[in-house]
Image 1: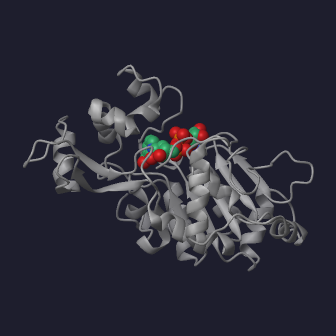
Image 2: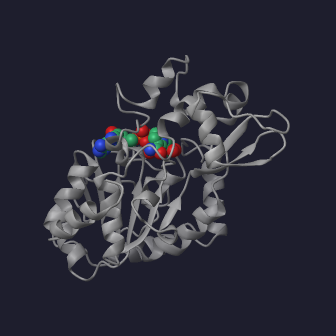
Image 3: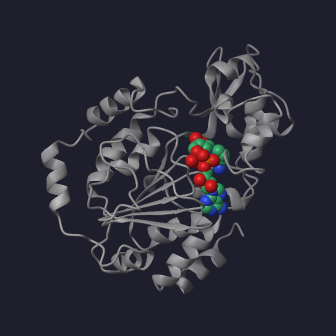
Length: 326
Ligand code: CNA
């Protein structure tokens, strides 16, 4: 994953080059004007308006973007929530930013905080949340074009969202590699070491074994850009849940849908005003806002409320009831 980027940051140019290289070029002035001239898609710029749009038959390709906030009710701490975030846990190690634990230079110097954090989010200990099942419900209804997640906890897979509908933008714990000799290790082998509070060490050369999750400064996988180029031009609703929209280039995805595409944020607080993409971040307060809606509260409550408005309450209940991970 790449880090927080400012508009002057040379990293932003690198992301843009990659989006362009994989087929999602920066829009021209004319493109933006054409998009802006299109008819407003929501009959009302509200949560209810979004629900009516989903059931209107005009909304067929929903892209969902998520972050750590959809997994906090599963018991996995996020980075930023005061008192419970990994941030607080890691202050024990004298780190001033949670980001340090996912920085390769810091990891090479001191891998311990990373493995403490990894233990907290390691796959196999947690169950998906209502929010994960809502995304699965969108898939079952044939409306989910893709779910882009920043999470590394693999709970979307546990909820049954299939690999072809999923982009794990920051990698996963599925495999790991020795930092010195590149020997591959399985998730199960690494799990045993991490759960025993050990730093996993290569059986061949004693190098540190790092799970294959993206660190700050690691390039995003090509697949991330390829899928974005495929998905964003046809996305007709963007749902963003449980993320502070700080990490780039993920955050810039909200600016890759056309300027007439409705966007719904379900989160504890508003965010995503400045995302350094080709189009504006969220513009909830703009006088002539035609498409951005914020629902504030927990993502689980937001998903339940939306399912209700959509008339999917019973389907949703059944899906959660029938999941074998209850
Ligand atoms: P973040 O920066 O910690 O932001 C989380 C956001 O979600 C904040 O705006 C919170 O207020 C909000 N939030 C937390 N809980 C809820 C809730 N129940 N309902 C509604 N909103 C809530 O996390 P991001 O995902 O934006 O940051 C990206 C990093 C965090 C990624 O690189 C992840 O890999 C990394 N991370 C992942 C996990 C995981 O896999 N579960 C856990 C912690 C960190």
